[in-house]
Length: 206
Image 1 (tube, helix red, strand yellow):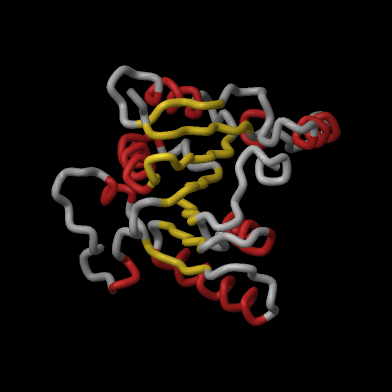
Image 2 (cartoon, rainbow, N blue to C red; image 1 turned 135 degrees about the vertical axis):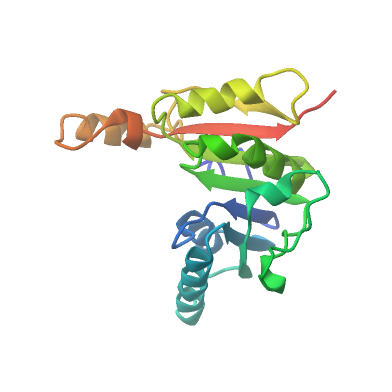
């Protein structure tokens, strides 16, 4: 939505997905829709990375990708600037920390991993280019999203909030709100888990 409205042009940009899971769906969707410089899909679980590589190969075979796409295993703990090695012990070259300087970093529904909030924050800060932005699409999940926002808002942190408030909607264009209105009375629908909102972050300035 942000690309379509001209708020965040993605053509020619280097894009990193964190926590892509078994499919890297968000990153693959971007790679199929825009002429990015590259899209790198990551997850911390080796089985997820292996399956993402299958998804990339299938999409490449069908000719749906408009830019280069690669997959890496990435442990958020490696984002901390504490002297930790970039390579995952026992891993391979593809498990190295992706190069920094990404124009856009994306993540979907990752903030409920509260025990690694500091590592996620550090990874976002390390991977972003100086003028880059991180776009997180998250549900509230029992206040975990608000807790992460409070962390970002503390004095002296590496990131600052550009946009983000529960209830604002993931795309802010009425699509999410319309779907929410259609589904909120459906059995099994839980706003706390299923209604996303958009968080936009950048490196702290000044």
